[in-house]
Amino acid sequence: MGLFRKKLKQEHKVMLQAERAGGELLPEYHRATPECPHPERWSMYDSMTAEAEVLEFLSTLVTTIKPELIVETGAFLGVSAVWMARGLKRNGFGRIISCEFDPVVFAKAQEKVAASGVAEWIELRNASSLEMQVSGTIDLFFSDSELGIREQEIRRFLPQISPTGVILMHDASSHPGLVREAALRMEAEGLISVVLLPTPRGLVVAQKRAGRR
Ligand SMILES: C[S@@+](CC[C@H](N)C(=O)[O-])C[C@H]1O[C@@H](n2cnc3c(N)ncnc32)[C@H](O)[C@@H]1O
Image 1 (spheres, helix red, strand yellow):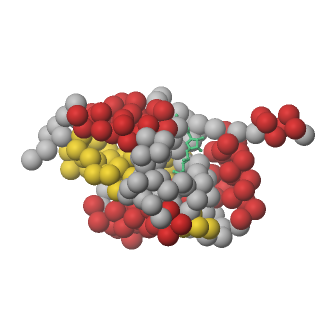
Image 2 (cartoon, helix red, strand yellow):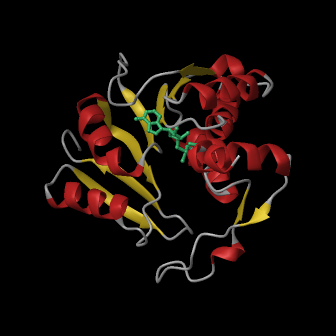
C-alpha cells in the first residue's frame, strides 16, 4: 500500500479527492503571495481545477469575445472546458478543443463532459499539447497543462492565434513563479503583451503583438 501511495501521480490523487468532495466548494488553499495576500477569499473545487471565480471569468470571457475556436491545454476533469462551453452555448456557436495526455484522467474527463449538458461544444483529445494538431485560427487559448511547458505551448501555437484573440496562462502567481517568468520573458521579447491578474494561483491575460492594429 505504501508503495502504491508513493507511486500515485498528483493528478490521480487530486482526481480521487475531487470525487470524494462531490462538487463541494472549498476555500482556496494556495499559499498567500505578495500580489494575492488573501487566497481564502476565493473558492475552489480542488487544487487542479481552476479557482471557482476563474471558472466564472472563463465563461464570461467566452460570452464577451465570442470565440469561434478555443484551445485548452490540460483538461484534467474537464471542468474549465465545461464552463467555457456554457459560454459557447449562450453564444450559439464555436467549439473547444481540449487535450489531456494522461489516459486515466482523460477517461474521467470524458465521463464528466458527457454528463455536463454541453458535451456537443467540446472536443476532448487524449493528446499532448506539444504534439496535437489543430487547424484554423484560435480565438481563445487557455494554457493550463504542466507548468514547465506552458511557454513552449504558447510559442508553438502563437502563429495560429488571432491578433484579436486572448491568451490565458494559469498558475502565474509569483510562487512558484515559473509561468509568470515565462510570460514576462515572452513579453520582453515583444511576442505578447500581458496583464497579471492577482488571483490565488495567478492568471495571465495576454494578447499577441504581431498583427495588432
Ligand atoms: C491544472 S490541470 C488542468 C485543470 C483544468 N484546466 C481545469 O481548470 O479544470 C493540468 C492537467 O494537464 C495535464 N497535462 C500535463 N501536461 C500535459 C500536456 N503536455 N498535454 C496535455 N495535458 C497535459 C495533466 O495531466 C493535468 O490533468
